Amino acid sequence: MEQKTKINAEEGKQDLVITREFELPLELLFKAYEDPEIVEQWMGTKVLKLENKNHGSWRFETSNEKANMVFQLSGVIHEFSPNQRIIRTFEMDNVPFGVQLEFLEFEKLTDDTSKLTMHIIYRSAAIRDEVLKLPFTYGINMAHNQLEKVLSKLK
Picture 1 (cartoon, rainbow, N blue to C red):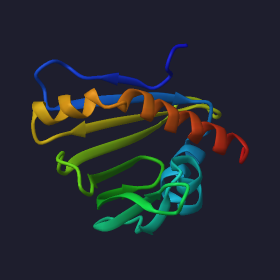
Picture 2: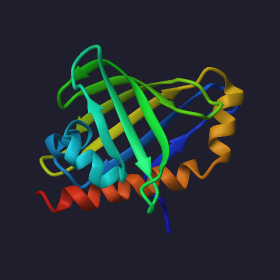
Picture 3: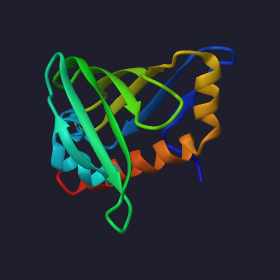
């Protein structure tokens, strides 16, 4: 089965570009990144903090079925432009990958479709390549599929 979320990772570079077209209006797609309740539903994580503003910050926590914390994610929101762009850092606690910089661009294609482009920059090409050895492609596709499923119910 073809994966709808595409990842472009050029050899020897420290960044990658993720693109996905959604059967969702732009405003609804953007809401998936700004509404804590919706974030929790499609990411399967608890939102501890989500300050949707320039120079805001965010923190999420994921637990297992026994309610034991598995990992935390956090970052700083450098730019928050509704229905257009989010520029943020992303860091996962207790992993050797360090902080990455993410540029999320939201684009209206039609009244009922939209596109998300994520440009992610890592500290080095080696770190990016280590991330790509994980089930990264599968995970981002699974997450985006869940996002579309959750939001389709809100249309």
